[in-house]
Length: 231
Ligand SMILES: [Zn+2]
Image (cartoon, rainbow, N blue to C red; front, side):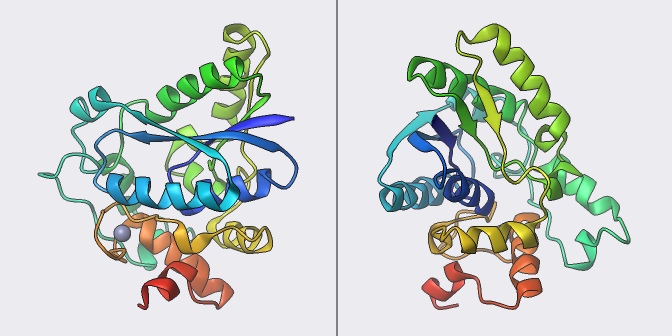
């Protein structure tokens, strides 16, 4: 069985790739450049991840998607929200996660990426598209949910001749479990970049940084990325 993987170099996509690579032949990774703040880091890190797994990488530019995106993930005039561990506590839901999700939303991003990957998967005779969609983010991002994955599978059963399917090994997992599984699968987390910003080091304050930090704190080990960067 062969698969195409969507690779942003974030914790989730690197973990999903490492887990999928244990049982599938990974034909290629696709990384999208839509003018996101962290784009340069994501290209640099995802290249390292592809080298680690010895897989071909294709970088696809989506300039138009950046142009029509007004939120802070792309638009440098808008501020990326800063969060704390308390803000992401599921036991006392805060409106700030909803606000944060809206602030980094890119119009139909996962829909666009999956459909592009679907064309590559069909043309390369691949059965699956591996994605890092996960249970923790499905709470605030509906395009990470099981319902969405099933709906895309259903659409692919009409739009691809080989019935490409979305494979989301993290769909039921929170970040702590994702880190555990990633470590078991020996994922190169020292080259995964989760921060919404593209600085030399992760900001430690955006929602993505905070969720990642909490996961490593829960497990009680140092993040291999921070270790490598000497932070
Ligand atoms: Zn950050």
